[in-house]
Image 1: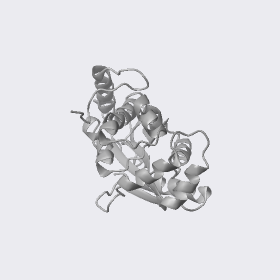
Image 2: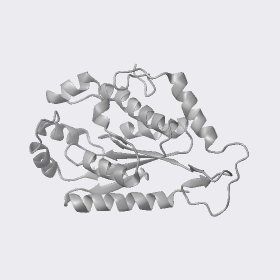
Image 3: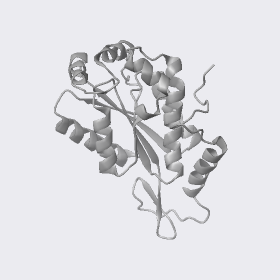
Length: 236
């Protein structure tokens, strides 16, 4: 049976669980090193250190979600550039078998997705282990249980805060946009299949920023960045 924590290859390689855990533990220890003086007046997202340097108070995962055609890549790249954060394109972490299925118009099953979702979560944590203060990640995350795979990231690194930027529009709008794509394995048929299993975030999912992408690209990008910056300011 597949589990959320199955070791999986990332970009063709198998990361060492021990080395990844050690790197993550090092980040956790560095966030509050012995002898560090936590001075009052610190900004909401950094902790000053005695040597004048600072470390992030929180590591943020900004997961841009939504069905095909909603503009996940465009929004995520814009946020990553504006925030100076690494960008992780979720589609690049699909195994070849998944890509072949989607290219042939065959919807992915839950079993197809578990290891992919775990790989995205682990890659985000590795970026933190090697110095990133946050990451921007794309993943359709169509069902709540898919989003929950990412939500357990704080179990491995306790200062992580997960955010979901849910991009949505009527199916007809997204069908039209996907139909204009050239050379992408995700065809118009996949839009309908994704809508058939889509579970829009509920009010209980308080870590979600919902954005209607029916309007112009400029307005969507502006709205996304403004709401992300506001959420950073709210961080405890």
